[in-house]
Length: 191
Figure 1: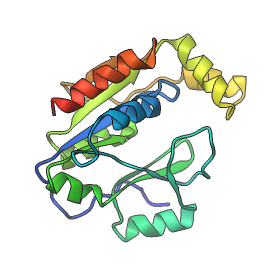
Figure 2 (figure 1 turned 120 degrees about the vertical axis):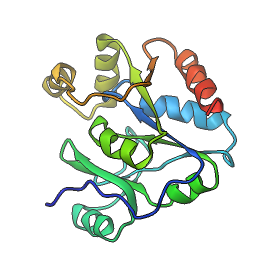
Figure 3 (figure 1 turned 135 degrees about the vertical axis):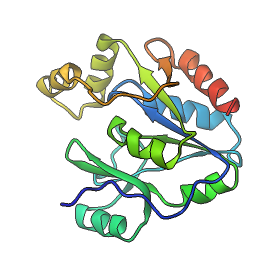
Figure 4 (figure 1 turned 60 degrees about the vertical axis):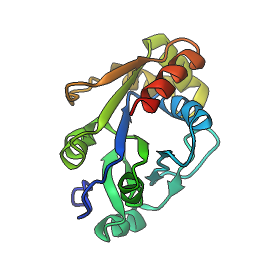
């Protein structure tokens, strides 16, 4: 398959793009859900990703496409950004462009690998890195029940080499959700 990094021809508007990154199991989706429940929907948009993975009760709420349909959608310009990671394809719908143009804050869970493309397209994007202690991540991954203990160890031992841009904000989500969640809410309100 050709590269899935796609960008639409539209130019970003006056809203703020907030890219949330972090290892699997740090609690990105939980933090985003916490913030979404506390912020006005007319000002803050939490992007629903399109993924080539079937929906299940243990993963994020997302739209599903099979690989062939995903690739066709990418070629048709239906994604503002798309990428491939861990054998799956991920896309952010082009509709986020209208939200940015309307001045809304757009929040999306993205891969670190897409950050260079994202910051080229949205130069004023804010990158939020969610981190957590190794044992906390291991427990969260095990609770999801999607991976074996060997797969979890492999995830924990993986080294991330993609550098994040200057100005990244780090949120530690090792303790209670409310503490890290309130930090994210305050950060988004300041955008």
